[in-house]
Amino acid sequence: MSIRLRLIIWYSTVFAAGLIGFAVTVWVGTRAVIRNDIDSWLTRQSAGFEEFLRKETHGSGQAAVIEETREFSTGLPRGSGVQLFDRTGKLLFTRPEMSFGSITEQPSTVTSDRAPVRALTRRVGVAGEEFQFVLWRSLDESEAALDDLRLVLFLMVPAFLLASFAGGWFLSRRALRPVDEITKAARQISLQSFPSSLPIPQHRDELQRLCEAWNEMLHRLEGSAQKLRQFTADASHELRTPVALIRTTAELTLRHDRSAKEYRSSLQKIQEDAMELTVVIESLMDLTRADSGQSGFARLPLDFRELASEIQPQFDPIRAEKNLDLEVQLPPEQVSVIGDRGALRRLLMVLLDNAIKFTVAPGRITLRVRKTSSEMVLEVEDSGIGISEQDIPRVFDRFYQVDGSRSGGGVGLGLSIAHWIVQGHNGRIEVHSILGHGSLFRVFLPIAMDGSTVKR
Image (tube, rainbow, N blue to C red; front, side, top):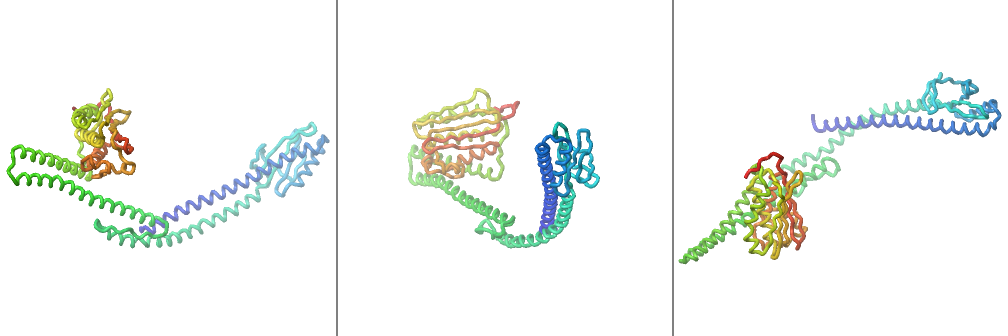
């Protein structure tokens, strides 16, 4: 079954259901409006008749009440009437002749000896006597109008259904005509060649939205390709620099005979550059694993409070050298999470290293660990240079370094690694910062279920 035929069938089915529902709603609504109009008329007329009897009889007795009822009946429209009874239920007056079944004080449909009518009854006291009257109105005219309406609606539904089938065929044929053009243009897309956009049919329909969505996807793919090319260029640049330094140092050292101290100094410089190169390579490998969706993280319970306390001594020399205060605030109880100890340790190292790198003396860095009912919250706050509002959305991009952080060193991969580690542990990371007033990195990780054994 072709798409065109399926569209026509679905369109016709939905249209038929809607049309039938509309017809039923119109008929039921019209019937309710007519009944409400009749009931309102009966209520108004009964109230007016009661008031008319009290004012016009002047206490003249039963004969006067009958006479006034007769006079009232002459003003009633065709298809309606009134009956008057005394206290015992004796019929005193009727116009026209009509007999009914049981009648209530509220308007209701009752069966008469002729046709169904809407009727109500009231009791009224006049000249010391109690009377009961019945006011009614025939439903013949309204039922005839409803029958005519039902016939019109019954004939209208198939006519409109045929029209909708023909219209659906025409519209689907016209709407699907641009598909071949879109397919032809889409086949020309490649990683090296991204068209500016696919042709968009200006029909304001699903195909137009589909083409717009395709164009948005093309823009995203083009952006991803540009990021890939930029990533490759940046990675090549970052790898080339330490390699060039190592090579230059070695060549300069080998040009002439050196003393043992000079050789040692050169080897130390080569070692430092090699360590920087190792960090870059490991970071790139981690990001490659992240791109491939293979985190490789262990899933073991561990005490994050203990892990945080172990990290602090490693940063004491560098924070003392930079004249910075490092405060660690840990909860008294164990904070057990499920994760990879090495990866979470690296997460702490990245966040603390980032805070120390961009905090000037005298500065303060605070590491906090707290626990909620379902999450562990890690906060690393510093009083450093901060991040501008426009740079915050990009701090986790690879190789991205804001202008104020260029003097801090590094290649811009640390926060990308931190973001990947957090995501790999089903957590989330957020950053709050004001330029010139410091930054706050907050990490949320799910805590381990009760009964988990912490691995040490």
